[in-house]
Structure formats: structure tokens, C-alpha cells
Image 1 (cartoon, rainbow, N blue to C red):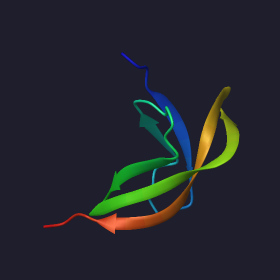
Image 2: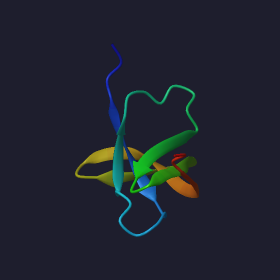
Image 3: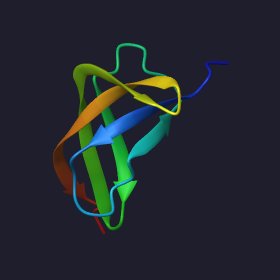
Length: 69
């Protein structure tokens, strides 16, 4: 089973988490994060940042979608 990893999130609305755990990043250029009443969408920024001694891929916020009712 693939090991999950953390990614660093940049931008997004206030209160968005600074990091996010994903199951796998194989060929994933985007990450979707549930937040409040919708989803925040982030795209790989082709850069990495160090956090607590770990090198994390950085994903920049690109847009928000809302949960359909």
C-alpha cells in the first residue's frame, strides 16, 4: 500500500491548512482539500520547501468550488 506524504499549501482563503496529507502524488499535479463548505484546489508549483527537516512539495491555491446540496 502506498505511503501517504505531506504537501505544503500556499495561498487560499483564511483558515486553510498550511500542510495536507495525501495518499499518493504519482502524476498528481493538483490536490483538493475540503475546507468549510467547499473544496480548495491547489496545483504543484514546481518547488519544494523544508518544514521540520522534511522537504515538502509546494502547492499553490488556484480556485475554490462549493459542495452541491
